[in-house]
Amino acid sequence: MMKQIKKYALGLVVLLFLGSCSDSFFDLTPSNEISVNDFYKTADDFNQAIIACYARLQGQTSYYKEFSEYRSDNLYISAPTAGTQDRYDIDHFIETSVNGLLESYWANFNNQVYRCNAILDRIDAVNIDESLQQQYKGEALFLRALAYFNMYRLWGTVPVTRTVVSPEKALKIGRCTEEEMFKYLSDDLGHAAELLPASFSGDDLGRATSGAANTLLAKVNLTFGKWEAAENALENVIGKYSLTSEPGDVFDVNNKMNSEVIFAVRFNKTVEGEGHGMWYTTVNPEMENSQSDALKNCFTANDKRGELISWVKIEGANTYVLKKYYDTDDPSTLRVGNDQILLRYADVLLMYAEALNELNSSPTSDALNALNKVRKRAGLTDLQLSDAPDKNTFRKAILLERQKEFPYEGHRWFDLVRMGAAKETMQAVGQTIEDYQLVFPIPQTELERINNTSLLWQNPNY
Image (cartoon, rainbow, N blue to C red; front, side):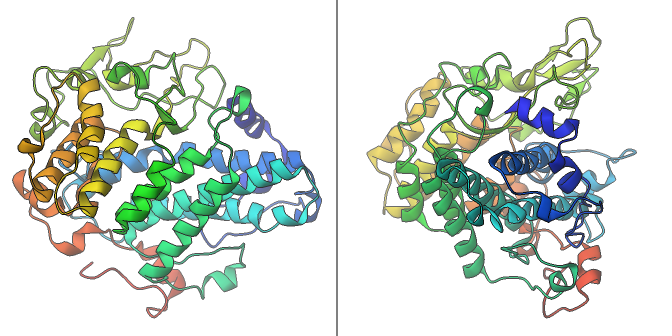
């Protein structure tokens, strides 16, 4: 997979065709001389185009930090500095429609959609190996759904395109309804799960699988309150993956795509342009104060996961990095190569517990067993039904377990919103928020482009 992304970066046709496109939703045609009619002819053409879709994910790593970790009670920024004003505003719930991060990700996700649509528009009409045709189609459906799901979690319903459209037509596409949004996402992911293989190996390791599609489908179903559908999707994944022996093993850069990883954004520090800078660093752990007391204090002394949010000195440097994402610079590229794990088996187990809890009048042994598998790996004793005897108490137990399991992974804010705990949780850390702040303002640039409030309107109270 990384070799293929490297090919893309070195200048294959798809780079010229797709990579030169503007990130704007409305720049939907390439600004170069290569004709679309000369591309999308062979299996290799479509493989290059799919790799371009994966490559777009590498530019989305900050999304999970800015809009989930800093938005939540996990991380905070006490005062803005040069370059952090937009983050500060999001962290303190004072962002406006001209926030640069919101503008950037609206464009980024829509460009990802465009790349996927360009493939889906043509894949059925070409004469290539049927198994490859199904695979590429499934990958494009999965990646398009991932982009739209991330947009939905930020803004609610958004304009949706199922095919490449002209800039003129794009200006006439309005926000979809909640029902339409759910159908778009569930249809794409359900179809992707049918088309994609269960696993890949070799250079293809890391591509989207049926397990990834079912896991994301379950998360979509939970977000829309479709508990039984979430349970069904998760049952297609349970038993197909396994927890690593130790919590830290999941993130070991020498053991990528291990038994727990279902889908990750791949990086390779030894390949020029395929590594990244260290995500969380400090030069003085004593003075580092972005971690909230709520996060630091949620771990008991015997919880193995607590040490993963500690700071570790980089060998030969006056820099400390979060232990969870420890890596050292490659001597040639001077980059690190942690993959960004988006879906993993611990998430499946905790989502399964959540779905079962919402489906039943009181906690069940199956829900408890799923939760306790995650606790046991962390070194904790099993939770008993007497510890969480009712649905609400058990929901809180799941939410706490998710906070301890996934810090810095981009789940926390979205968990709080989905499980109805955002206002109460933020109030507990001194931040009063209103219902309208569960979503973000639509970027002003997009409102001005459409210039029609019957098609695209600002979210209330922004």
